[in-house]
Length: 130
Image (cartoon, rainbow, N blue to C red; front, top):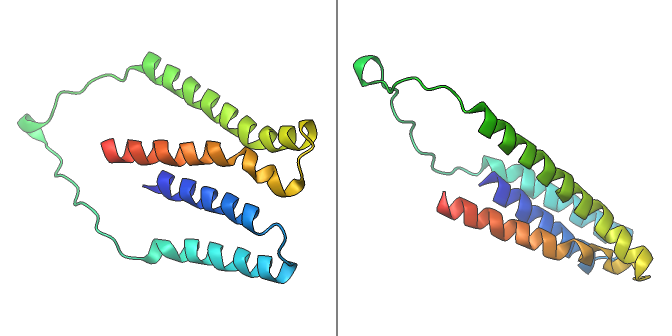
């Protein structure tokens, strides 16, 4: 749920950057103050939370298992690699677009928009299935 929320905020911010590149400072500052304030206050909106399941003890408790450290280590390395690629795309794609294709600065946000939309869709799909 939180991943979807933050991905949606990032996509929204990219659209705002594309839409407001010609606005004056006062209008841009107003938007940049109102949106983060709304995002900050959104956590105080009440929502339903499931009650935790009771913990079994004694004869009803499941048998203790050892952790599969090799699989966890592989998963951890895959996550580190994913975030390295993620950071590289969001950092260097606008620079590549601006310097290689001589695109105007107002279109630099277009470089990361498809990536951010795909990120939002994949997180929404993962949340819906899990």
